[in-house]
Image (cartoon, rainbow, N blue to C red):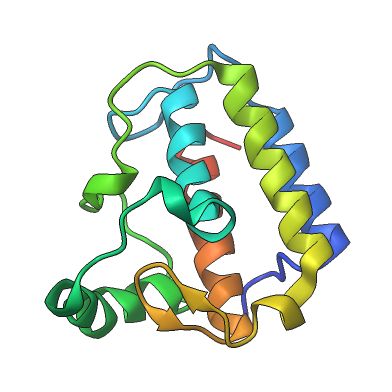
Amino acid sequence: MALPQVFSREVTDELVARIGKLSPESRALWGKMNVSQMLAHCNVTYEMVYEPERHRKPGGIMKWMLRKMVKPKVVGEQPYKQNNPTAPQFIISDQREFSNEKQRLESYLHKTQELGASWFDGRESHSFGALNATEWNNMFYKHLDHHLKQFGV
């Protein structure tokens, strides 16, 4: 079953509305992150696209391993399981400011929707090589949906 399309205005609006239901007091149903850390964690995916200089790219052997072992899980349609291990660059251990992280995430969602599927189709990802538009969509939607569900929205 195909995942909702992050490149459509309707899905972007739905995701932004779900984010809007979060507050600094929102509590996780599982996991260790607080809500501000979760938003910052979700922003990392978009930073790797729009601000790649913030994150070091994996080297040859690591990139090969990521493509072979992690990519199918990340870009496929199968939902993530709770409490999966987190890649080091996605671990947010310091405290973050809720409204700033929320605004950044909403901005990234709108930018992604406005650029559209054709902009992403064939674009090189930080860790997995070139992805098609469906793989980008699945990666973006599945990750954010997983964490919004983690916080009950």
